[in-house]
Length: 86
Length: 116
Image 1 (cartoon, rainbow over the protein chains, first blue to last red):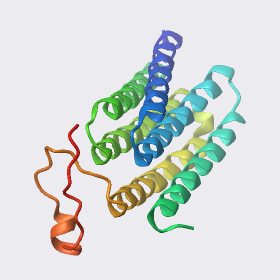
Image 2: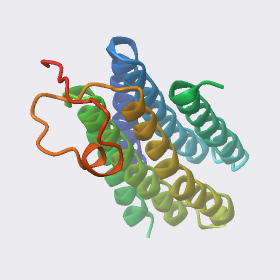
Image 3: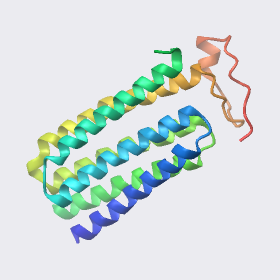
Image 4: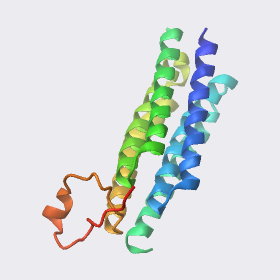
C-alpha cells in the first residue's frame, strides 16, 4: 500500500521534472530558463530523497543537501550576472 | 503512521506537479516565477515531512534539508525577480498594476508589453 502510493508520487515528480525541462528548452528569455532550472533542481531534490527511501540508505540525503546548495548558488550567481555583471 | 506519511508525500508531489504545470502555462516571466517557486517550495516541504513520518530515524538530515529549503528558495526567487525587472523583461499585456515602477523608480519604462 505504502509502496504503491510512493510509486505514484515518484511518477508525479518525474512528470514535474519533464515539464520543467520542456520550459528550459522552449523558454523565450533567460529568466524563464533560470526559473525552469530552479524548479527542475528542487523537484530532483525531493526525487533523490524518495530514492533514499526506496534504497533504504540515508547516505543519499547528503547528496540531496549538496545538490540543493549547488542549485541555490547557481541561481544566485546567474541572477547577479544578469543584473549588473560579475 | 506510515500510511499518513505516504499520503503527505503524495500531496507534496501533487504540488510539485502543479507548480511545473503553471511553469508551462503562465504567460509571463514574473508569473512563472510566482507559480514555479511557491508551489515547488511547498511541495518539497511536504515531501520531506512525509519522509520523516516514514523513516523516523532520519529526522536530523531531513530537518536540515527542510530548514535549508525554507531559507534559500524564497531568496533565490526574490533575487531572480529583481534581476528580471532590472533587465527590463516585458510584462504581459494583461498587467493591471506595477507598483515598483510607480513608487521606487518612476523613470523605468517597463511597460512596453509583449503580445503573448
